[in-house]
Length: 336
Ligand SMILES: [Zn+2]
View 1 (cartoon, rainbow, N blue to C red):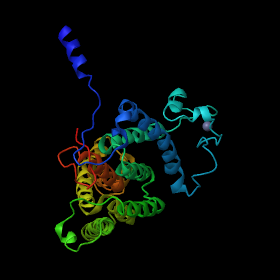
View 2 (tube, rainbow, N blue to C red):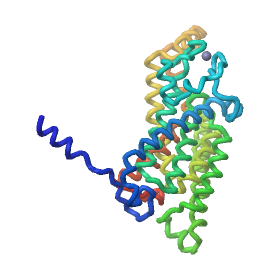
View 3 (cartoon, helix red, strand yellow):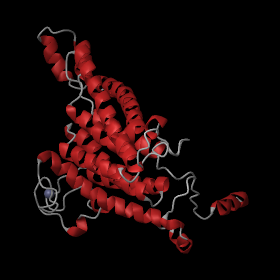
View 4 (cartoon, helix red, strand yellow):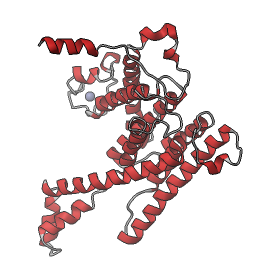
């Protein structure tokens, strides 16, 4: 026990963020060292509050309802939610996931989205400090969060989010540009902002074209629609944020993740007897034996490709800089 105690005492060291590429960070000011311990906490609080707004977007944008007014209502009984019940994460926990008025269950999606947004905000801080890229990736994380959940819920990747993100991504590209863009471009002696915009546009064009051709190929081989234009538009938006290399890696990881998890999901649906009734009915009409019909039905399950691409975006933004390639996106600064 004494040894353990000694170890835990050794663990307490000041939080430090040594930078690899010199770039001024607000919390590196000598006078502000003591607030570093509370910064992640504030990022989390800010994140769960923003997450609560993302829930509004997720619930309302596919329905075409304004995200500004009216205020939050119970989706079942339409009673306005009281401010003290609307506290992110805690409100849902205190009410045990039930509406105070009608006592019908409230989806756990709400606290989960809030908590995950808080976690992503903390992760953004630990990866990028307090810099311009942090601001960029906070917005990006919010947009991707909306797309992931909307795609899971209703298989829609709203144009509003993709178009808005495309504009924001381009705007950031004029200020944050790749440090190490392929020589080919640098030869042209372009100003930095133009290199940034070029990288963003190339990322958008390449990302959406690659996905579009994959969709066309899929349609040709399987003779049915595999993915919608929503995924193609989403990749255009992602391209403006992550640039050429980032969007390439996103598609690579996203489709890999989609195929692995997709196959696993189809096997699970099959094993747990998804739509067995339908298979029995079809079998009675002489369309084949129940088992093979069940497999056919399970394999028709429409996977949320946009959600997989979204998860891949998070791996690229938060994973790659930590695992050995700190300047992959051109603006990564931290290496613990
Ligand atoms: Zn209610």
